[in-house]
Image 1 (tube, rainbow, N blue to C red):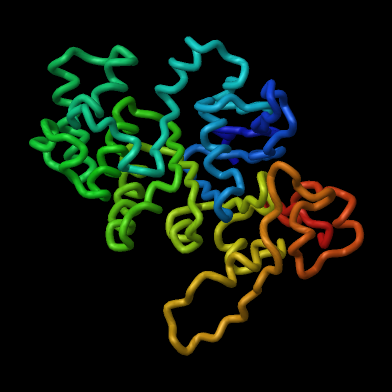
Image 2 (image 1 turned 90 degrees about the vertical axis):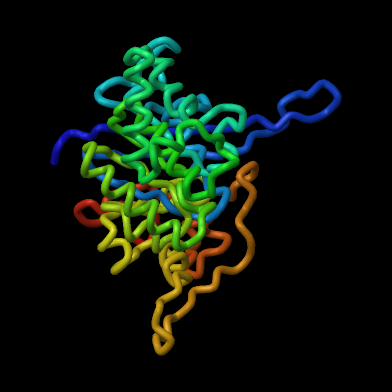
Length: 321
């Protein structure tokens, strides 16, 4: 196995809860709680889980768009959490993000040309003429036309805006792209176009993706390996075939049972979870999933399971294994 491009070790991000008349700290929201994984060059690692499980926060903490509370993020042999702001700015040339909402992530007052050329300007790449040419080239690459450069974001549809977001992320030739639910705000027909575009770009530019989503069929389509998150923790990580054919964690089984199968005669057994997701500001002791787990044992209520390999490349955090 090649050495990992990105290695996340025991990453935590806690947000303080302030209350009272003086705004003192009264608690904390454990958005990301002890997440570890490796991402290899040229790979697409999908991260799934229900809303509020800490997927997007993990992506943003890796890029230090929000500062991690604890843990280390080793990118290309360098610990991102320990570098200065100036070094971080240089590192961001190799790590870019595609944001979830194509309506909010583009500045409505800037033309498309200005939006896409901004990263080039920040990193001091090329002359004005070269930047102009690069913008036209990138627009063609993502399936738009060079004459779109003079338009504003409100003149585009959701799918076209996401393409502009992808072009902006590609402008500085990054090695790693963190895709934060890049297709969740789009129509199903447009989703497939964007996913196919992303696969083509990966091969064309030798990119590595961390692909965050909550749609399991989308993740299966695009990923090489898949990690499942629940309440700020990674509960299972495996190659996509292993995970979809033989899920081990009870939560993964429940998630996969909810994926619709496009066959009217197919009768699948649906695993219905009881209760609601606990609050991340007050997670249960032991295994965080024990309050809803159909296979809960006594040990689950008190002892936190370790995230460990069960077979080659299949990791799970569960007392059953």
